[in-house]
Length: 297
Image (tube, rainbow, N blue to C red; front, top):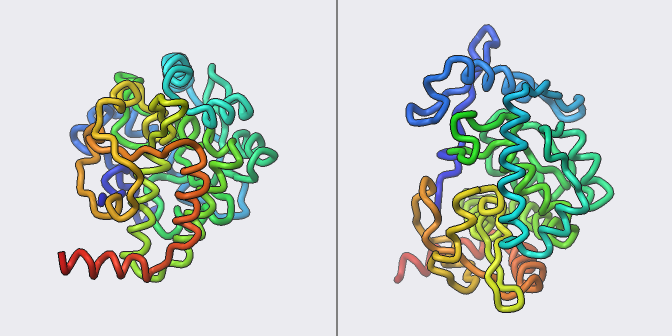
């Protein structure tokens, strides 16, 4: 189990409407006044945005476009070697630019005909019930900021590279997008925090950090792996276990390090049938049974 709030820098607005992104002291940009200002500048329109409004567009700087280009260039050969075919097919179909940061509405325009998904802007952390529940409607909440230029191949938090390069290339594959829709429907059915957390934990170990055997070779399909320059090279050294939903929901781990335990689907059908089927059938009763079993263990 994990606290998703640890992944995002808090975003606040004072009584005068000034928006501030609060970076942790160990964040690469914590002591860069211009980066802090830029983060708050990008967050403000997203924080004020309401469904039905035009999605805020960001005029990305040359430095920000260079970060995007660097990461896309460095990840491309790793994807070709280590990503599942379903991801590579989605990536080819979506055809994101590699030399500049795309706007969220441009990504939505590409996703629409492929899977029906669209992006909503997020200033930072989106509440669990909103983030996961929105997937049922074909909505994915995406940040718009980029990691600090001093470490273009590392980010301590989900940025637009993680959201778009990791998640949106997956959403361009209709079969994988359907798994995400099912997760959203499961979240919508949950009326207890325990049930919602169960959905979030299974989502974490599948859509975020899932791996898969294809033709006897272990490959990555989790967005967290596919958007990480370092971790994508290390996942084959993890403790690889078969898919076990109750284990996923009770496993404690440190989100600030490479994941030591990963769960592998045996081919695409286990993801699109078994994982999707789990989400399709999940409700609060399943979470309650798990809690009772844990209490008596």
